Image (cartoon, rainbow, N blue to C red; front, top):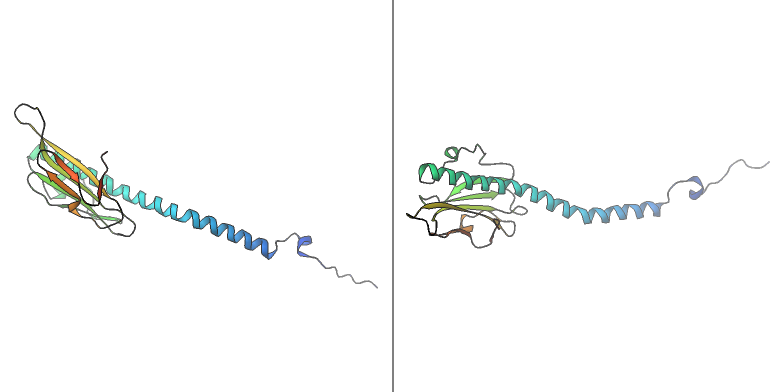
Length: 173
């Protein structure tokens, strides 16, 4: 009597071999290793957009406040923006406030992956204007690498306006 047992090889059964599975896992791992840094970089850029928007809004609010009151303020509530001074990613402050200039700073919660932003608003004169009319000049600066916020990222030159300094680059251009 013949045996009714039949032997199957892996190829006949339609399954995958261990080598085929390992190759697929290695390919997925390599693709993940390539894509993950790009994804994390895009996530950091999205978080930094919040800071750019807040500092830009603070600059514009300072300009409007100066037009009404002829001075700058360090009180967020007087600017009428209704923004939080602390979010998940950043803490915001008005530093180095004088009667002729104000500096707005974002302090990243994670200084290893997020860049700081600094905004400056100052009083300048319009060239060639009759009667020496005054205007407000603003700048938005971003650190070149992830780091803590620093109000020294903006310098003020009389009648020229604010400019980026140190390791901060101008985002207005």
